[in-house]
Image 1 (cartoon, helix red, strand yellow):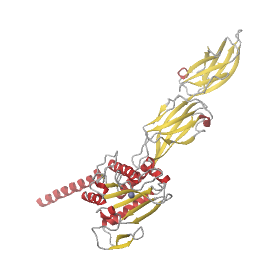
Image 2 (cartoon, rainbow, N blue to C red):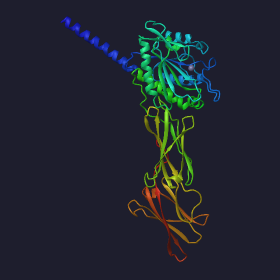
Image 3 (cartoon, rainbow, N blue to C red):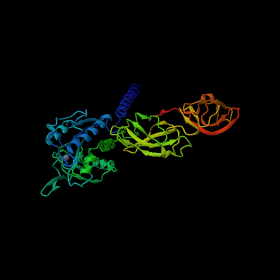
Length: 469
Ligand SMILES: [Zn+2]
């Protein structure tokens, strides 16, 4: 009995340990690692000490672009729960650094500092120099490590007279470097410039760190137009997102970008009128990981359903506010409410609804001759009859099409300063009916004789303007 009980206790203890072990995985979010992986990002070169490649026509320096991309990668990885270090500081990035900019001007300092904290991965961010039309990105990993001399052989290097070391029996970290390079290669696909090569090269940091490590050459600073692309925030967002996704994929993390972008608000334009152009804006559009790639807006007037639906690409003002200009003439100059529905995609292809607004478009300019009607709000409209003829009275029978003439009201027109007659109709006096209203105008002469002057109709949307995010 005693033995049996002891055995049971042992099973309970073993189960508890197993559960604790499983929980530690769940809490950390990384199924492969019991702790969050430690990652070091090296912004290649050092702002203020070594600019790296420089483009004399655009003035863009490699060190500045490297720092911007490295800072974004480090920040995003930190947000995902990784333990992240920069080898040296990036202006505006709060991620901790291992060295000062001055110290990081020595690559042996950089490799030693990385090895000291025993990270799980080190990434060097560089950009390339070559011809003025050279284009594309490259990944470098090293089979050779200075601490593993077994199997080392020498090949001719990249330049004449230069040699490089390789290892015929690469250590685990070197083999994993090749694996991570292939993950990067897969995730960079479609970034907008071409993949040139993924190759072995005994770059100093990659050949001297004890962890898996890849050097990224993100594109050519020496190419003027490519240097401008590489220096743009939009492309840096894209590249950093793809590096972060690669890290997540490499560690088997459940941290892939699976969410479409979001917006803080959608801005309604100031009372647009027919024949005008109005602007709709999705404010503060952002994406959690891979960055916003594309924002567009669908516009249609409520009149006749979505017959006039058009898609407009939205433009980023550089601050994450995306706008599109809508020419009401392209929507048959219809009055009443328009829907503006924004959608956005991120760089991983997640696409979703950002939010929308209903925009009230009213009639432009003066009042036309004869009978006309104009929406004043979602529930009110003004009927106007303008003529050079004089009447003792102008009467407006008004009813909603809904349920026939059950809500018919004869309104007496009020004399206007332009000599016409007008009345404001509120749909609360018509059972809050929405949809089309019939409006007729009758003129009464001095003998009390009534003459039909004209008819019109108007659509009362009954909707409220503003954001429906
Ligand atoms: Zn470089």
